[in-house]
Image (cartoon, rainbow, N blue to C red; front, side, top):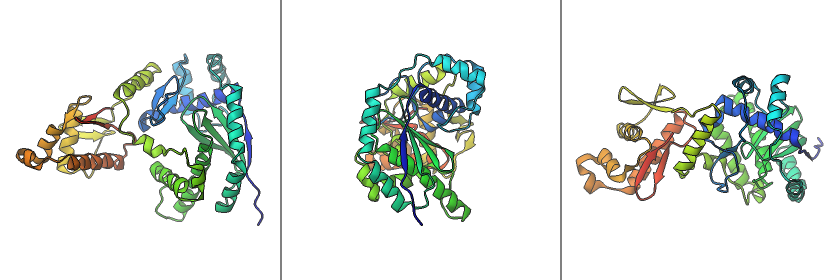
Length: 345
């Protein structure tokens, strides 16, 4: 059977940016970014280790936000009413666009690896149905996303602060998604709803296979989501910005009747010590829980003799892991170097 090379088309104009903003606004309205722990800002943050969503201040009515929340996910054309689309477009009349020179530079960089990328997908994924890839550079949203408007076309949105090699991993995400669906139908272990599993699979392919030639500047999204070193002031600024848009970030961990719940459900498989530590962190939310306080919880009267920063670090690692296994997507326990830990939602 003969397979055709993937064909790549670049597309960029004001309309593609408006469509990107519609997609981004929809995810804000649905609470997706908030739940995943994405920080939101009006301008790009020079710190690439922080997972951010870029979204300008637009004066949108509650009715438009409601329509946006119902829009089907994807980077393709809008699916909201003509009236709402017209009002949204008016708000976008002064949005900043990527300079033409920057777009041309991105296209030129991609052109240097395009044939190698196409060949590699042809060899390693011969069943890949997406032969037409439309690349949509953008200033807004997350670092990148993907959407398949039909059976053989793939739309890839990539933010202009990312290396063009990131396009490769975005295509891989779609391929892994297809494979996970096939495995589900065959009743294999991979759960197509487990976002972390698919991201882990993409990380492996990008760093441990022939695709690693395009991974020089590759950053794992999982690493960014799990980044426990996000400055507290940026988290607060982000929470304030979400609130200014009409979508305050709600606490996912709550203390009720002396027990901590996650999304209003009991947290499973916590050890008694982990439960005590989490309760103490939540009681002192926003403040530092010192190493001495943790030692008292972990070892009680023997804390002086048993004191071990390594053991504490391992305990916090296990606690973070169990929270994620219970459905928590974002990081809430942050390391305070030389002091202890703090919980911020």
